[in-house]
Image (cartoon, rainbow, N blue to C red):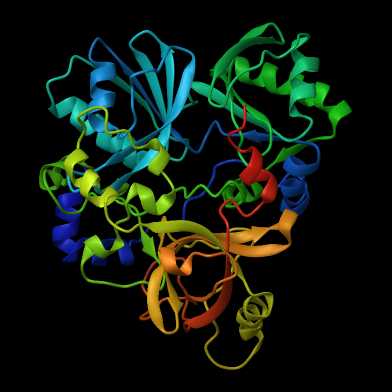
Length: 450
């Protein structure tokens, strides 16, 4: 029997000790890293059209049964007052104390049938409550290709960029209906029925296409063939993993599963292999210091107090208190260059900065300082070719969130953890300028339009 998360934590001494020194490699997207080079591939979703293969790195949880909607509503902060078939939403859940578990995309496929797609953190939480609660539901879990045996159940492709709409009309031979953001439609491509989600991955117009795995090759071939006339670019995992920096989505915030009501039972259910890893300069022995709220990540628009859900009362109290704000931190080029240059100098260098994505744990939590005091945390970080900038997404106190404010990101761990991706290094301070999230003006103004 697989070791539970509870047993692994007890063996390590604490959740922080377990995750800080987790002997797992950083998350790998099991698709081709680069088809050309990640710089050109990043530019494609801004300049022409990008084709990204999402079939392998996410988990699908298919939920069906007469109580499926009730379960979803009981767990999510979202409103389900209006959620018809052929629509989707960002599904957000919190623990009983109102702190974020995680988020994923929820597709309403058919009456009483849903597909929750994304990172496993919130998927695990939902499945646990469905299996242990009084719900008439069934689950079919299709994990990512790193752990699954055999092929995925579905293929999933992303088309993004200014030429995406024209390409879709070319390959389907029909006008694309006017579909609202996160609305769904059905098309015919290469004689196969294809379902589509209107989606904007990096602020650009786009479509998420999915269907049975056995249809995937024919659909992809048709997209590539038709795409030649629209400068279609195949995008590998390196560029794809950095796309969230433009849309300002934080993919793996630290999940609030290690303390609070009901979490002891949950950690006894959760396999130790799904606890993740913790990286970054922020350190505390109190695991709750790593937790964030939905408001810290800009999900306030998603919270709806029109129904009872896990954590509602606590979240109402949090909502009434001062909030941190999600921002983009633009790292000063000279400080990034100095950190890289330290690898060519005698002595202990700064923590290696990888391009285009520099995250070295599943949950990256770095300190953000202003005038020597902690004012927030920095999450994902990496390089955006389209903005010629190295940035991170951060949650910081409102009084320091005004664009143009200067802050410090502390880069590197002290003491160094024993994670495989952590070499001997020293901490450095990197100056950064607060800017809006999303950083790209196009993404800010167009991400949810339509």
